Length: 500
Image (cartoon, rainbow, N blue to C red; front, side):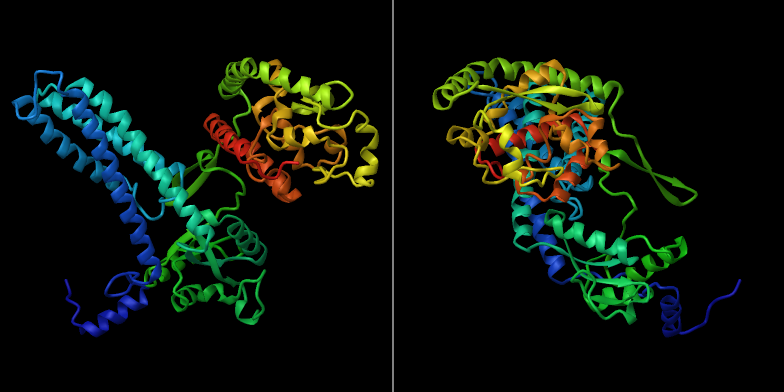
């Protein structure tokens, strides 16, 4: 056995050679650290307020004035102590589960899942402890506190997420990000980051192969150097995150060395897989001999998920149809009074797997509108065509379109099975004939009464944006996602945008 007799300064040199700072990773104290602390503090205050209200309601409803047990009696006093301890443990459990990590705050689904898992886990542990010590915890207390607590905590987080997204839209609370990789992959990621401010990233520079010889900006973003010196660029420009995309030299050894070098800067390393528009529920990471392998599950277009979607369409669509009968009849009478022609408009559209079906709508145009289509479009018919100032639309029709009332008869298409409540926009054969291989995937699902396209800007979106949203829905459909889109649809109906 030998003892290393080198001086401390020599040992520091060894640490530096290994890519490991002697004093440990640099702790960030700049603006990024401050705004992350603000987000965490907000979450702590919101969680504490929510759980305090939940346990207070549980106590009051369990021991109200109508019962014989009062606050200062033994049983009531025990539950005061239980409520205080439960509230403190609840807030602590959410923190231990990572529910207040700056990485998940504002992320939506993952943040809510961590909060719910922490809550359910805490109450499960509480039940086990009470069983072991033979304490009869009142079921009515738990029955009130647990659901109200989950609703309040998740609701509070939703409010904080909404506030954070608004702040990020104003350019606040962003992580300064350096993108590393091949030019094409870097440009694609930069554009995606620019389109989605809610994710909380702002690209401040890129590093490319041979970047020292490329002084010109890439897609408006400055080149800060080559990939070999990415860690130095991250340190020099006070970067919070380094996003690595694909490039020919991205070997495991290179990525590992980059991770070691970034430890001294305090910046996070993010590896962007070559998978576009695939939602996280379809991804699962499995370690294989120390290498994380990303597994991608197929879209749920068949099997039990398909049955659940159809059942949801029939039940919910049928209820909506019963409610909509009287309004549709009233609007149909107004259409007949204000313009000549039938109140109901029918048209052939292309449905799932390319099967045509008859779509029903309330008429919003003049009776001879179809004959004038070529004149209005001036011969230009694209995959998404809809003039903003169509002279064929009647005055009442503009009102119906603005609030999507003309689409109410399509509930009959939903119940019949031609359409779904949620899905891509149903298109005519002329549009479908122009599909490329990617767009043909829109036909893998039924067209919808509403969809991701409709709640994200509708006709104000570009063709590329509309296509991307439709394909994202096809690849990542879920029943919970459908419910979320329907809730957003209700908001769009009350405050419409992009409809004409």
